[in-house]
Image 1 (cartoon, rainbow, N blue to C red):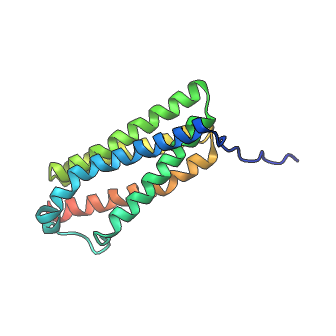
Image 2 (tube, rainbow, N blue to C red; image 1 turned 60 degrees about the horizontal axis):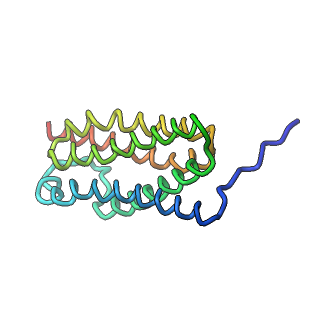
Image 3 (cartoon, one colour; image 1 turned 30 degrees about the horizontal axis):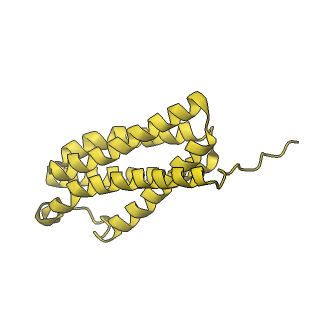
Length: 169
């Protein structure tokens, strides 16, 4: 019987710390871009929409997203440091696609004030997160696992988006 290999960890070198800071900065840059589309449209547009009973309070969203963006940055750092060659390139490409779709959803739903566009955009967005998890897993299981709460949150957001679309036809 073989035992599983111990998880690998990125080195704690000056280069590694710079990559970590860059990964976190990139993730939080996406957060900032999304907030540019979101914040001006919270009142009165979003507040005026009919929402389902399971809609979290507005205060929950920045807390959840801050945690998720930090996890994304940390996962990206692990893959950037532990991955090699084509596998790392595929994983980084998948991450870039999902990050762009993340920002795009805020513009589709909030800036365009369109639950329909948000629904159309969130489907490939969620698929791209699952693709990213699949691309991260062979490089680093920890990095893949760090993205699972993100996938769950976006799946919930898709259900919420669909309910808002239905209620506001």
